[in-house]
Length: 218
Image (tube, rainbow, N blue to C red; front, top):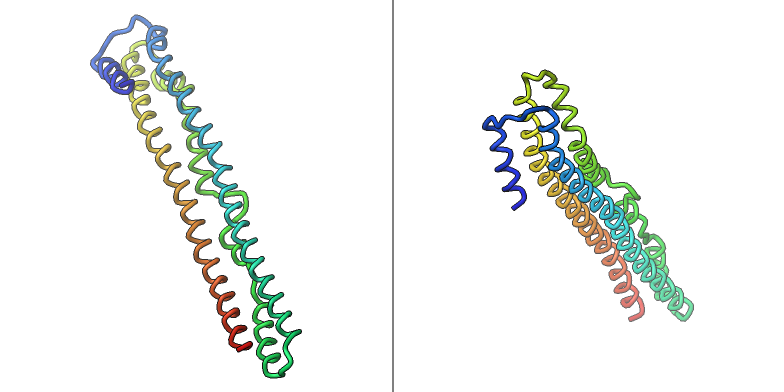
């Protein structure tokens, strides 16, 4: 509703409404610009809060997956060592020793290096920072339009400049908020896909060795 009212006001201004002074023009537009500065700042602050939450979520999910796999690997190694110690036949010992070598080569390091890139995510940072830049523009709009239209005879151009910029700001806010949301979802989905792929590979290797150990003991 607010945007519809704003558009109506701005369209009225486009049609050549006459102000008596620059002060009148500024008084008309300043509340609209201040409102946008406040709203855009809220959007930026929300994104700034979301960013570390996304990073922590990815970190925690990665570390949880790594810890679970490391526990499985440790259990597998203990099982093989126990079976070797209890085995009496050389062929069984040799078979288990081969699986022990394979188990010792298992590592979750690739998951950390591939799925957890650290504390920075450039695309998400850029999307967040763009909202911060946008939040500063409303406060600079009047001065910028005044510098482009400094003459008293340019009052209508001054009005048009501010009006167009307000409409542009509303559009850009929608675009940038949508972009941050999209990049955030892409970042989380990419991490989830990476974890699924990497943990799947290592889990399969663990299962394969467990199966071979069972065959060695049969």
